[in-house]
Length: 412
Image 1: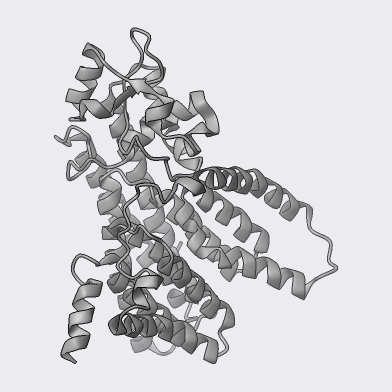
Image 2: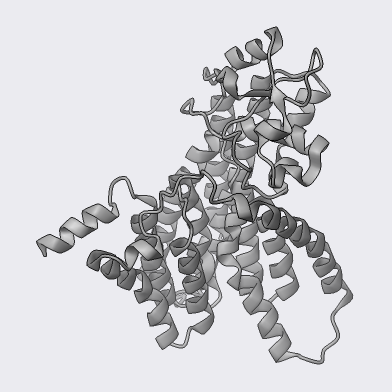
C-alpha cells in the first residue's frame, strides 16, 4: 500500500466503509434482479450461460443460445420469469425434459462475445443454482456481491499505484510540498471519480472490474520491468474480458524489451512457470474469440460515435481525431516511445470497435497509472488529457455526439 501510514489508513477506512455500505445495499436491494437500477443487465444471462458452458463447452462461442437450448415452458419457467421479471420468450432450458432448470438468457439469437473467464467468474452463482437449488434472484445476488468485492480490490490497488509514487517523492521533489500536495489532490480526485464509476456499474451487475484488476497488475508489472508478470496478468485480463486487448502493447513491449536487452540470457525457472501458466489462458481465450469472430457483426448494434470510417467522412471528425492523436504524438516527439505506443494502440482499438457502451469506459482506468513507469509529471498530464478526450469522444456519445461536434464545426 501507500508508504505514508496516514494516507494508507484513510484509504483503507474509506474502502472499508464503502464495501460495507455497498454489500448492505445489495443485500437489501428491492430490485428483482438485485442490480442497483433494476436494469436488464447481463449478469443474469452470464449465470445461465455458465451453466450452459458446463454442458455444451465451447459451442457457446459459435452457436446462439436459441439454437443450443430449447424454450422453457411450464410453472417453473413462469415462476423464474416472474421472480426476475424476465420475458418468457427469453426463457430457455438445456432440454425439454420435465423439471429442466429454467435459464433466462438475453440476446439469445446472438453468439455470446465473452471469453471463457466470464463463466469461471459466474461459477459460484451457477453452482448455487444447480447444486444448492438456489433461486435465480439469490444467484444474481451472489454475482453482484462478487462484482462489488472485486471493485473494492481495484480501488485499493488503484490507490496504491496513484498515490505511491507521490508519497515516495518520485513525482515531485521531496522538499516541494506544494507540488506534492497538488499531485495528491489530483490523484485523489481521479481515484474518487474512477471509483464511483466502477462501483456504480459493479452494483448493476457488471463484472468488468475483474479484468480491470488484472490490467492494473499488468501495468504495475510493466512499470517494474517484469515481462513474465506482465504477460501472465495480461493473459488473465483477456481471459475475463476481450476489451483487455486494448492494452496488448503492454506485454508486447515488455517481452520485446527483455529480448533486446538480454537476448542470450536463459529464462529463469520462475518466469518460465509464469509463461506456462499464461499459455492455457491465452489459448482458450484466443480459441473462443476465433470461434465467435465470424458472428460478431451479426445483429450487434453499431453505436460507436467515432468509428474510423465515420470520423474520416466529416471535417469535425478529423478535428476530433487530431485532438485524440495530440497526446500520443507529443509523447513520441518527447521520445517517450513506449508510452506513446500504448496510447496509440488503445486509440486504434477504440476507432475500430463497432459497439461501445458507457460502462466500457472502465477500461480507460489503467491509463491513469501508466506514467508510473517514467515517473514524470508531464507524462501524466499528457495521459490525463488523452484519457479525458477518449472519455468525451467515445463514451459520452449521447451527450457529446458526432452530430454535436459537426454542428459546432459548422458554427466555427
